[in-house]
Image (tube, rainbow, N blue to C red):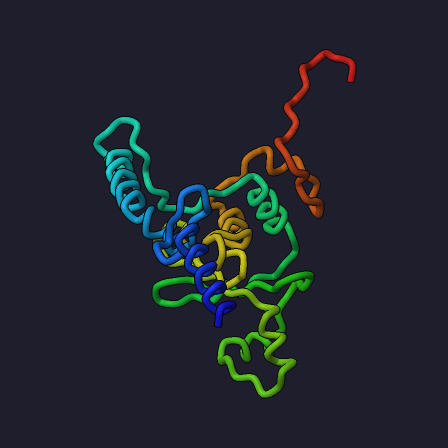
Length: 208
């Protein structure tokens, strides 16, 4: 009985010392719940301040306004890979619809798509697992008529992640809707661009 009272008294002192029932205590790290409760007012104030500042920064009437991106940016590495893809020997099949053009592109090292596989891909009817696997050897690129080539849609993983891919840019190069920068043509076809900024052209009449 005496030991129970001692343990109970010690436990109460421990609770009073660290104030866990209050969820806060000086000189002691607070609990997660207490941290959220104490910072809730501060978070609200910061959120309101951020919204007010962002509203001013996005005001289109200002000279130095920050505009929202409406189109995905094309990096130099993407320009390079798209240029290499456009110069490859891949046979792309084009089918015209009423409002768009659909391009069927062979993936990986394939240069063409068998007609039997293409028909099965369009119907999406597979009887074996190997037929389902072969359907991933075809990418589908859709380009709407009388629209910007940047708004084309592809079902490859790169486009689903970044809303732009080498197939979209490469078809734009093939159809002569756009021209790659000169720096994208410096890398030999079949090689990847190295990391970092491209080296600048050296001054003429200097011994290399």
